[in-house]
Length: 295
Length: 199
Image (cartoon, rainbow over all chains, first blue to last red; front, side, top):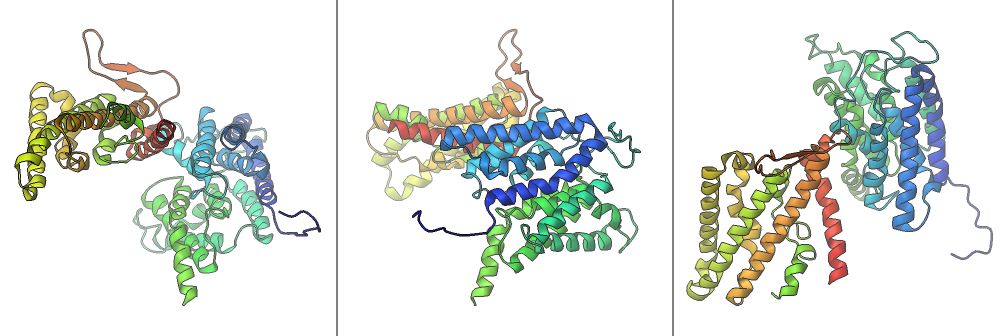
């Protein structure tokens, strides 16, 4: 690159995007730590620490440079920590974050070349590796806020069934900032939420024998796992498609799959699984939309 | 095939780890080390048998009949091995399931080129079989150690056959079928890296 002349630009940088997303997670993380207590804080700290350490080690040993500066490892660690329940043993967030950075991201060539959101990959790896350790437990964790049991239900903002409405609200606020700054494409969470809400409302009551249009819509939309997946994981610029039609289709697919996996698969981490599955279809969706536009 | 290549086949030309041949039984049975050892042994046996026979086929059989005869021979050898194992070691054979008879249509058996002299063919068959067995055992060792927390071998005397590893609770993904692909990917990268240094 030639150096002279001020090559002005004011576009967003990778570091800026990653740090903004991390900042948007901060309120929800703070609230989660306050509501669920020191165990939640430990899970979060271990996830972030492991993510940064593995990124540093791989960057130095494989690429001979420090890749911590792009901020993606920090974001991955935060997302992993937030998606895990607070009562998880501490090796679980460590393994999840290490898997996310080393296997899902670095093995494919580093940031920008991974086809699945790293945090999702790590979260799902531990989900399927230690299902018993992460199973939903009704006993609330003791936080500093002394909340009633309904609000602090032992999950750190998602991923394990019944989830705190308040943290979902904070996640949604952070997500709204990302959408307003156009860091996240609005089509994805919009289509995700619409498809999820529609299918849950229409068919969610069927397994319980309630008939059509009797689904439990508020509970589904208020789940922290859904908010985290729709606003922060599905909108990962690396692993989501370009183009409006492709983004809408991507989001809608996430929504329908989330519904199927949650209501019929009985999986509390259904939104994560749905986004991971739809990540595989991103090249196909992009090709389809390019083909339509080219005609 | 020269003797130096016999070592190279372990890494640079490993049929399982580098050419990804014979994946189907490999992924299915590599959840226990003992299964991998058995399947690798049967594969080595069948490869040696077809390797020896290939020389005769080259010499006496008309070209049109070589492939059908190879197929016939491979299935005969695998079936013989299967009967033998079921008769004398049923507890070890049962976990192999359908993948043991399926070895007879494995592309490693059918695709091996029977060419050159008798000793060349034999050496090549031995190298491929040994490389397959080693690759399979490595895969199974990693998968079982990390995915189940055990290492299963044959029981000898007072040794019950199962080593229990301590450490983290086993990561169940690695013992499941997708885990095989994870581990195989990394072993394949390792084999290619080592092979590149040697060639």
